[in-house]
Length: 165
Image 1: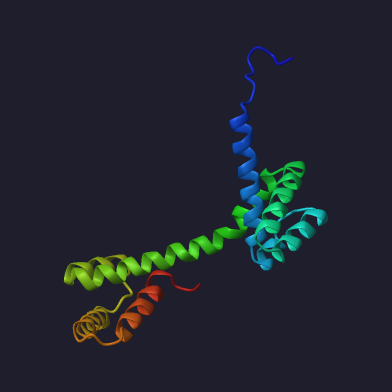
Image 2 (image 1 turned 90 degrees about the horizontal axis):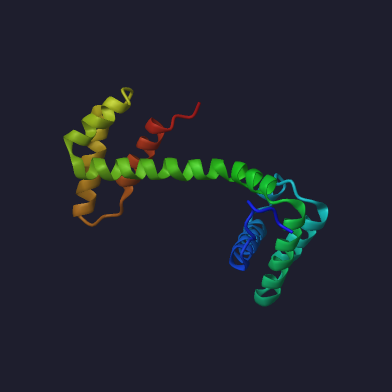
């Protein structure tokens, strides 16, 4: 019998938790091998994940449900934490890429104000080079040429905003 202060878990809540664990199993199956080796899972679970990678459609779904059951037995939280820690560098790289894209777009649409803003953010930037890259990229866009200078501007901004230490 449950203590008075604890409420029974509803069937819907149990199902949501089960689906969340199965979704974690699907993420593990889709995870590249170089990341999977960093996740602390049992040998039996690792074999089940490897087997699921080779299956198609319905069989794969059944295997993912099985992996969900194995995950529930092992404990999900350490696996979630390790997965988050493993994927963080990839997410950081994507975030940096988007930041550089936004600056490039801002420079192409913002004129001198945007150039002054990036110069205040990165004092090592070369004003003349930035102006030339922006001007040439805009000319290429108007002439409907391939965005060669646009790419050069992106590379220059990437090096400015994310210097390799």
